[in-house]
Amino acid sequence: MDMTRLTAVGLIQEYERKTLSCLDVARGYLDRAEKYGRLNVFVHLDGEAILSRARALDAKRASGAAMGRLAGVPVAIKDVLCVEGEPTTCGSKMLSNFRPPYSATVIERLLAEDAILVGKTNMDEFAMGSSTENSAYGPTRNPWDEERIPGGSSGGSAAAVAADLAPLSLGSDTGGSIRQPAAVCGIVGLKPTYGRVSRYGLIAFASSLDQIGPFAHDVADAALLLGVISGPDPRDATCVDAPVPDYLATLDEAPRALRIGIVREFFGAGLDPEVEAAVRAAIQVYEDAGATVREVSLPHSKYGVPAYYIVAPAECSSNLARYDGTIFGRRSADFSPRYPGEDKLPPIVRMMMASRAEGFGAEVKRRIMLGTFALSAGYADQYYNQALKARRLIRNDFDAAFHEVDVLVGPTSPTPAFKLGERAADPLAMYLSDVYTITANLAGIPGISIPCGLTKAGLPIGLQLLAPAFAEESLLRAARVFERAGDWHLKRPPLA
Image (cartoon, rainbow, N blue to C red; front, side):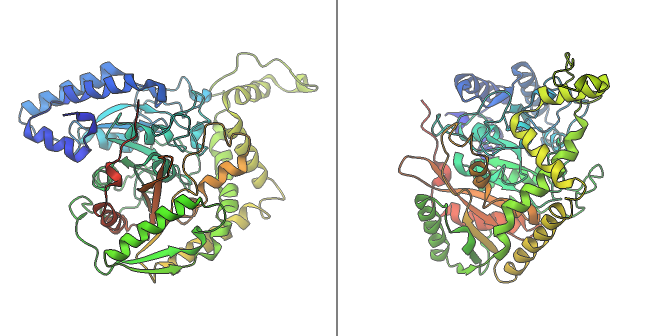
């Protein structure tokens, strides 16, 4: 039995049968991570700490103590989440030496349920990107085709699950950074409702958009991990104090009279024909299963990309202002004057300028400048406030649609994974990779991407489902209807 091919639920079952030990499993995943190191999935992997944790869990099980819901299950962690004492770099030179003195709430919850943390995964710097090419530690490669991107910004977490380097992983989704990599890596990725999962300990990109969520091979594993990380947290004022359903327990309850809405605006220019064909075939599966299918419109979704690229950079310029080399972030050792007139600036100002120039990559600088401009005097009303109005209209569209249907469907990504470097010089083309996912973040609603096909070239295609706020239970059950009807979730990349 290849233990690294098991799902989290399957692994737990083997533990209960006493056919595996945590130590065996930990060693198996460490060996596989070494074997496929060329994918550049992990930016930090402490083998001794992982084995020590596994031994402790084996001893706990042997003592007869009650075990947590994730006992012995390896979970890979996106490098945007703080783990006490462990490097947390956000894929940036700016935080290359940062070791947080505390853990994120989601990390505390994983440890409380006896999970094994298996390393920090690569990502686009400060979660800004759709390809994991913006990392200061080099790009991650897609396990399905190593010359292609794994999506972003959580590309390392998606590739970790796709390549069976961990059965579960955590990512963050600000404009599609869980769902888009899940789609192009052929796995399940879920963005919860804004406020469902605590953001405490998540290094912020855009605070009104960021949300932490799970990657998994199937919907059951995603439901299991979502149940563990969800719930109120007094350390995050935006985290909602609402009961958390047992997502896994109700997963196989067939939704009654499921109403599916096909989003008209998600099938237009720029959509790859093979992606459209696979998504249309998936919709037919729902019809065959007895769902009522109708077309719905989200008329203001056309403003999603422009509104997002005002709101998100504006919040990023504010959040990243703290990294100036004084208290937070990399401090430049050389801040001697470099440009005319710079010698007249105070040394501390030159140090801040040099530190930010050295610490941030090109994409982060681009978004900081966009956001600073959008918030500047005389332009905030013209840009930022107008974007907030568009955001409200987008949310209104979703609210109206959910009066008519239970779940909205469409493609997750307009194209399969593109080649490394293909869009590096074209920021607009890169930004449009998230054209179908951005609006869910602006509206704060949950969304999931599930595998629904392969292109002729063998590249994964993702189906996106969207549901009303805090309707993750219904969303997961609707996704499970499709999953039960096929075997796309069982496919694995042909790694050499």
